[in-house]
Image 1 (cartoon, rainbow, N blue to C red):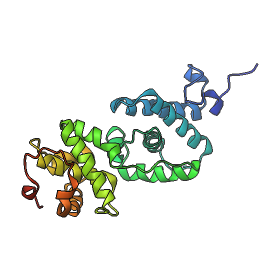
Image 2 (spheres, rainbow, N blue to C red; image 1 turned 45 degrees about the vertical axis):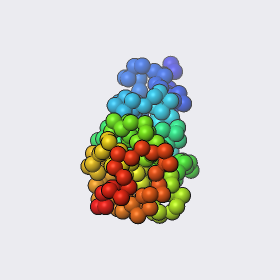
Image 3 (spheres, one colour; image 1 turned 90 degrees about the horizontal axis):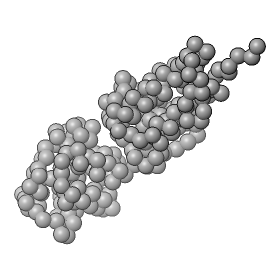
Length: 234
């Protein structure tokens, strides 16, 4: 009598189980299935579409079959795979956003992220300030004019080399702070930091780098509620 197969062949390329009866599964298959459920749960909590889930499952399956991250928990690997899938599909999320829907620390997700890229010999596009601007501003309830100004400020700051070595997320947060402070929809560093997943001090450091050139950073058609010379100096 030939029994149903187990192991990697029990799942299709997107991590969907081919067999529904868990009793016929090996412990390896059960572990993979549990990871796929966790990936779906995390994705649902931050409203990620099916294509992200499929790519994450595929990445997890490759890592799991290679056994290249022995000693790391499956939840940590799944969280890092979700972070990579978001980057590769052009809808990046911050480590803090992934951390908020998983049970794993930001540090451990970061470690697994680097190990997976090396193990799979894959890469992710560099993130830019624009990748986060729309979502951060939307979550802060900022109007389109402020979002467009913040995007312009961040881009100009990078072009003028005002923020060397600063992370795109911290530059985006500082640009949002500057744009909002110049508008009628003012937001505090803490409000922005909570959404962007960066500390107040990190926003201040980036803001101080761009503040001296504030007059050169705003779009020509920006309608100021607070003029440039009255912006917070921090």
